[in-house]
Image (cartoon, rainbow, N blue to C red):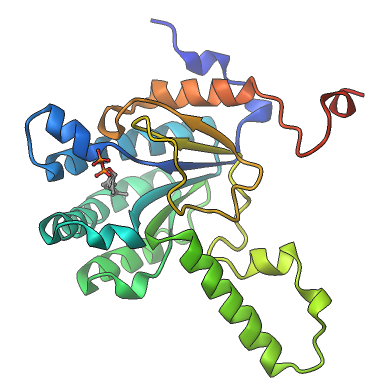
Length: 249
Ligand code: FPP
């Protein structure tokens, strides 16, 4: 069977892909199982997408694993998600090492349960020297939280250095104060499960990102679905505010 992978142009491969992994609960419902069953099956999709990105040469993959709003879910589900995270991290760190993948996390990690935080920090430390690809988990993350933190840090810095001018506040300074400092903005954002929302994800960073929505539920998402999204992305004209004519002269 032919694969869409053959249609991907390496020259215009996105350097950074961001994902909103949605639809685990609905997938579980379709299978008449509890929501947690959907999350457990979502891990397979995480593996597939990570592997596919590394194989293609994507440099950064950011996954929205838990938002600041997700604490409002039933306690049983929150606890199960946290446990799943510890389990997955301890199981998969070996695979990350073998594949030279660095793990990072963005979000307010201090509020995670101690066991989850420990497992995460250990996996980050163990993979710190890997260079092939960076896998970024957005955990207890929301873009408004991140932007608020950036504002706090800039203001605090300005208070300490009275001679600073407001003109020093620009895109670059804000970039440097976000949790994604040093990471290029994603060129492609994929959301599964048919929802067409951004849900407080990377709001600053997606100013010019191409958005791709698919009805596939996250636990069903496979490499071929990723290839399809990339081929679609590569068929678009990215104008960054210019006209089409300007781009082609
Ligand atoms: C959204 O589906 C999914 C989540 C909030 C959790 C995503 C977590 C995983 C895929 C598990 C493991 C992740 C890592 C990185 C190890 P939903 O529950 O909102 O689905 P619904 O909209 O159908 O209810």
